[in-house]
Length: 302
Image (cartoon, rainbow, N blue to C red; front, side, top):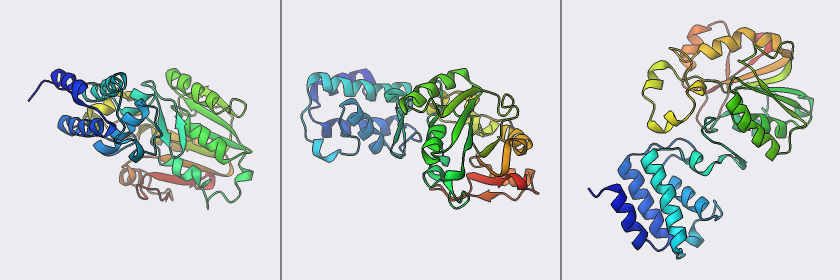
């Protein structure tokens, strides 16, 4: 097999069109056995995204540009980002410094995990039917906010709400600050450094959202290399992945207003969670991935 350096040098001399670059990228991604799980789930979609982004072309329109001839600097720019994806196994979002949840774009870098929460889907529907009137939601907490994406989506979903966005990581809050400013929501979103509820004292909310660390120790040890570029603090949560969730459940009631809702994403831990808390009447919310990833509890059920 030809060394990667020689392969990319040859490509710089022979690739001409966007179609050429796309074919080359898909071949290299498949050959390298890359893992896809940070915005796309296959080599073709990820290659198309990286190429379109690098060429400053509309991300939703590939076909009109497939046979466009590229300049030498454009070819080199495309090959540079493709090579980094293969050699460094960085998630695409860290290469482009952007991630998308639906139509909403967020700045990201390696100080935060790449946004991919199922809670974003529920916010697009304003948590219907569990929230009967979105206008009545006036206080929201997004705990473990990371990039601030869910806090921003919550502020957009509930126009009368003030949102607290908390995280243990000061690095993460620096990234969240960038995104909150980008959406011009400084007046409605307050960023707070806190280990879960510890620094939130007597604050109470109509809705508490949390996408906490939930990867168990065994799974953490087996994560693909792409995930190892993300902050481990935001991924692992003890032997069974439930350490953070246990603390959340223990303290949530005192931070919820009457009728308030707690929504927590827990990955593939549904069975373990229900076994650990058999008395709690979890409601499992339907998302694109199924009905096992996000649970809902009212204050009165805690």
